Length: 424
Image (cartoon, rainbow, N blue to C red; front, side, top):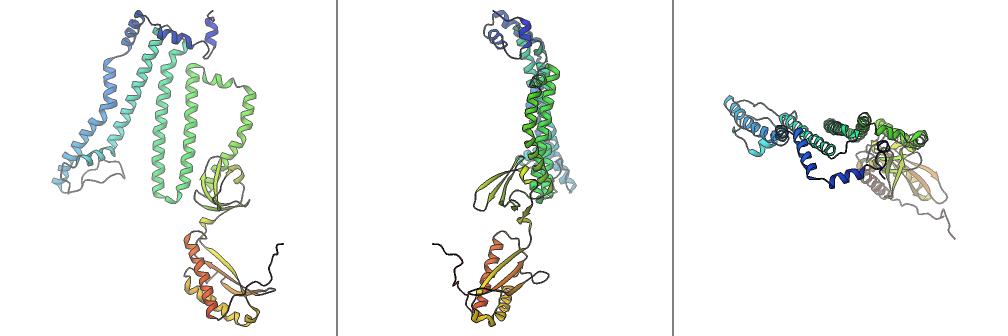
């Protein structure tokens, strides 16, 4: 028993596949004749020829014209006038033809020049639109086929319009995304230090453009077919409440990620110390989570919602470092220490050119009397970031300078007599 037509019209998909399959595989000779006749009425050979010519012939034809003008006429004019030629290329791309041009130019150079010109940019966009128009043309023919075989559902009349709108809207969105990437690259070339911030802005713009595209597609489906938004609304208030509650944490994480990117606190590759004790290198900044590689090479993913309000120290952006070390001497040598500590400072100054001697503490002093030794503290600051090979090389040179000064003073370091911890 076949369901009533009124019931089929109310369903979205149920009961609508079988009629299509049956119609396609049980076609009679009269059906084929009718399909050919109906498709022939809407399809026009001139239309197809024009679209094919624009889609696949426009770019190479203009390339030949460009090569002739740029390599021949323009080159000869430049050579005869003895001055710089006229550039047909886009700003910042390629070189202008100078007075040394030979007129014809190399074919590969002409082809590369053409692909960097505004003429190619315009012709390529026209070709893309023509190829998309052929897809819409094919969709129109398919709709006619389904109407011919008797599948006359009312929503089929809007399929071609919806397909064309979605296709061209997606193409425009893709073109805008390409232009956005071009602008971001230009900004990156002018300010390489803002690389990570521009990457985050690029991701945010991609997300915004995708969201707008999806909204427009749903709008087209709703206006033309009445299907999309009606189906979404069928979720009901209970589903909407569940989705809203579940998305609160996601929205909070995204906002925290955007805030961190815009606040310039840290970027990928920076060494950071967070207020909760997490220390390491930023591996990846995401919309929802930030990946940190700790000093033991383990990786931890931290939700952005947890990082938003934390204190953070960006070690990579610190231009100065401090190195403090404590030295142990014998009580018998306490009277020799002032002279030895002064010698340590002189040796450090000679060995470490990045040492800061003015405006910041630079000390080598007796700091305490311990049970089995006299303790001295050497406190130095350097014009170096506290990360990287330069920092560790400088730190090593400082320790070697201390050892040389102690040996010159005829002193020896004291070894512990009383262990600080005894294990049974």
